[in-house]
Structures are given as C-alpha cells and as structure tokens.
Amino acid sequence: MVLSLAMTSVVRLRLISLVGSVIFVVYGSLIGSVPIGLTNVAIAALNIWFLRNELGGHRALGAVVVPVDSPFLADFLQFHLADIRRFQPDFAIPEPEPDLVAMLLMRDGLPAGAFIGRQRGTDLLVVLDHVTKPYRDSQISTWLFGRGSAVFRRLGVERLVSPPGTDAHRTYLERMGFTRSGAAMYVRELP
Image (cartoon, rainbow, N blue to C red):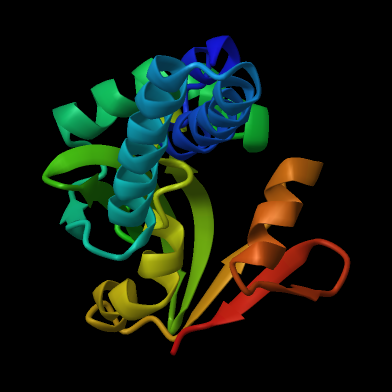
C-alpha cells in the first residue's frame, strides 16, 4: 500500500494498490477480521473500477497542432525538459522552422505530452515524442499512432521516422510498432 502511494503513474498506483488490497483481503480472512476483509474488498473494487476507466478506452484523447513557438508549448517543454532528456538526451527546444510540426497531446482536456516532428514530404522525422509521467500508461501513444493518426494524415504524413534515443526509448518505439530501419532509425507506417 505504501509503495502504491509513491507511484507517479496512475495505472501503476492502481495496480500496486489492487495487489496490496487483495493481500489484505487474504490476511483479513486468515485472522478472521471482517473489517479488514470488507475494507480491502471495497478498495480492490475501486481500484478495478478506476483501472477499467483508465485502460478501457473511455478517455478523451487528442492531439492539437500548435505553433512551434507557442508560449504554452515552450513553458510545457521547459518544465518537463529534464524528464524529456531521460529518454531523448539530445533534445533541445527547437526554434521555429517552416518544416516543424508541433502538437500538444491531450487527455481529458488537459495537456499530457508533446510531439514535434520535421516534415520531409510524406515522412515526419520525430524530434520529440513525450508523455508526462502521470499519463505514460494512459495509452495516449497507442491512440496517436493508431486511431488518432488522422492528425498526421491531415498533414500529408504517411510514415514516422524516429532516432532511437536511450534503451528505454528504443523499447518504447518497438512497443509502439516502429521497426528498425538501418543502424540509426526506427520507422512506423501509419494506418
């Protein structure tokens, strides 16, 4: 239970809390304590309810194209810069250029991440693909590269090309359906 409170990811918090409550249900049963058992059955049910809502696709997800020099985007990137560089260590906040495309990734009307790419014809070279800690398990990226890919299609993009960044970033790219292309890039065809 204590470990769940240390989580920054909502999904991990709920999963660890669920495991803890199930353990306490068993513990309550073993010592014959009805209050411990009932309280933790209620906690487990709440965790299942919230996990179902979080992972069940009922969230309002979106991507809003914004100017690269948008003050809000600049503040967002500056605030999250240290976390961004954990996955993409070479990232620097870009200056506006005609071929740069920037998006704020939204969840339930709140900014949850940012995506920046450099458009080259029908390819979009990924400069930044970042979701903030609390929303990393919220399936925003799965939505963006799947059902939400229309935002890319409206820009004329058919394929995303990304450098691998760190090992964790490589793993993320592979999980999102990117495939290795040569020694230094990962590619994902859009549906």
